Length: 251
Length: 228
Image 1 (spheres, each protein chain N blue to C red):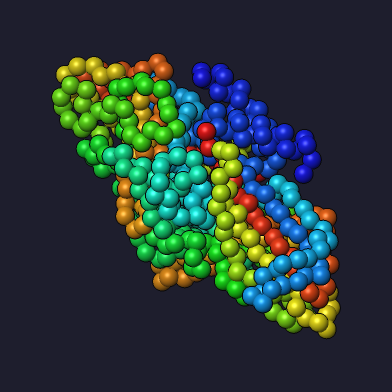
Image 2: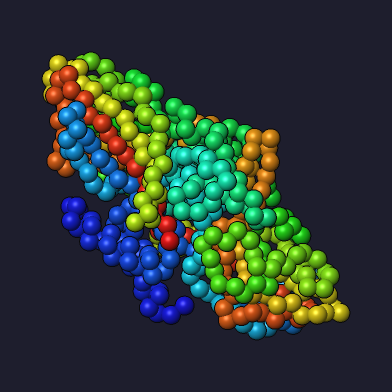
């Protein structure tokens, strides 16, 4: 991230505070590790950092915008069959448009968001091995598109060819100065000795929500970023640690 | 901060956000008199800590679980009684946000939805209720709150703004003029499965707006989000 961008971010934060505006800024961070040494618990105790990056994420998707206005303003995402300008709806990662004229999308199917979103059932939280929600990676390198609803080429969990092992998606909360940070992280490990290498060109953050009272769940992409410099060439034993740092500045 | 200063900062912020592909939730306040005259039409000046905590809980996927102070670093709510509320769940709206609930107050309900008051104490980020709210009634400085109309979604293709707008009528049968100096938005926000009446925005009117006896005002409050 260059100095000009840092200065602009600082100015945005200061101005948002002056006007009392909710203005989330997200940072996309990753490290490509090689020669990884782990302890007997599987924790990384040493590694060589092959490449790393920390950039502002510029890639909130339409799903995220619609979620935020639906929640902040209090409006059902009721535009059935339409996903685009002027419509309030969501698009699941399989391309299905989801809408409701009876409730806002939530996690638990109950009367409210009465769920612990920091547990394994949460919005971004994903368990070990799960590619259902949380952070995911893909092979795609296509340009970011506001209406995207899926990665260009999802890399699935596993030890087969072209797969990576997904760790749990975990949360760290912190306050630095007057900036609150919710940092969601996940490791992706190449664990197939026979290869081939896996190319990671993109990452995304997915929220898991109820869209119908049955209840029926779908997974919605909220963020997508192209890995730069990239793509990352993952060899056997390599680990890719990724994080989305979602921040809000308080007065 | 006057409206001109506000606009200057907003213009700079809007440009920076366009460059960085960021967004923000803005509010807008409009007050119309009984004859259709626009008395107030300006940016809302003040979503508060409750609103910020509610939003970061939603977008950051964090619980409103900090039982400590109502201060930076703690995600929780302070309801209109001044009590800090916390719990190991996300902060969310009631399930049926378009029912007469959430930001929509019932007729005669002076605890929920758009409410008015007579105090012009400056806005503070930690305020949790109007400073001197007009109660429902017919006595001095009391008003009649009508049911908040069903919220309306709007889209402006030119500015690319999506808005959710609430309108509530407030009448005066107190026998004297009432000088309104503040407007608040109180929502039914859910935390740990319990509904809490929570103020999410308060605007100090400058200059004040008077409602004469037997007259009414329409308070129109909008949440806005500009799309790329």
